[in-house]
Length: 484
Image (cartoon, rainbow, N blue to C red; front, side, top):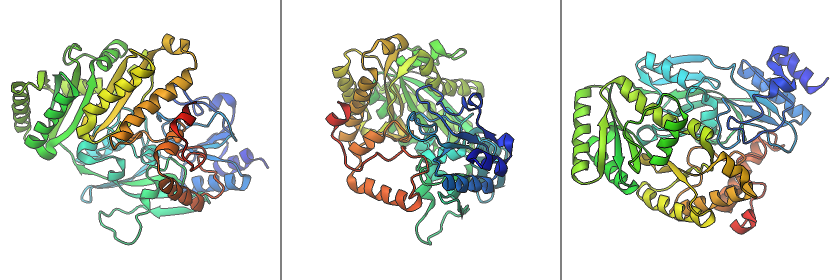
């Protein structure tokens, strides 16, 4: 019996895709930058089926690649171009919301639940699931957890890791760890869920999760500011934090180049302010009561900022539709960039106070490699995460000699700047296929050794998402060796 026949017997023929045409949507990432081949795609409907698939793959010695909504920016959810073809375990049929406990502020969901569906279920119960991403209409909870996704709510609520209470995980030997705790306090040894959050499918397949909920904000104040510089935006962040405390729920910055791309390539988007401002900031205040008070303090802070020369111009949304339109502009950046050209997206995080210096130094570093290359910036300024994106038009990229080497060199130069400022080269996107080389350079041998020991313990055959997250060798290569 072949592996495909074995899997068909376990799941049913309709849950095992192996025709080349059927595989097309599963073996390439959404930006068209990574593609490979798969032995097949399986669509399990339960945790027991996932465990059975894993055991079958272990018997056959075939790699296993967990896949959620396939919205990764690092090629972590599709097969590699080289190496053994894996079985893709796509969790889209596992989308049940198992339970919601409003009094406990928790919700238990299967890994295939789309993020927006979880948000809607929480809101219907008067609660908030606080992780919010541009891809929330298609990304899945399991993938969010496996990559420790960030997004626009990190400033107030933390990233995905901070919003997980418990997990259910199928381990690489096919056993199931039942860790779906609903507790805020559980001091009974190692908190094992953190092994799998951010592990990118290399240690197990997350099949369900207990998520932390929060009171649903019912009062909002949203404004769009034009500012002269990142330094001015940082000054305004301080004013908002002092005046608003925990009511400050989002603080997002983009430059004028990014705004123009959205306006030109995303139909229906309208600029809250003219793109002539060099920098733009979207700020949101949220609470469970008294929207009038929130709007008042928003105006007060904006007026103070204008008096002190930090704000050039600002507009405050007066309706829910206006608030949604402002957020739609912010959430359209990835799709707009895909249409406009090839952005060498980086995912640095530095101390919040270092963001202006990071942008200036990274710009200089890139222009030493490609003078005058356009750069766009999308920053979760409130938490120090900067997507610094050197940008090529499609014709410029296609005409560039040795473009892959040049792209790697540019990204490394940006990551080096972040490292020297006490930052990291991956804040919320993960490592995937893209950044394993940077892991070898920037992670210490001690850290890599610990991670490899855990990988060896749980997955000694290296069948779970091989080639991702960890570099091939723990010996760190020099930047010159990596980029030659």
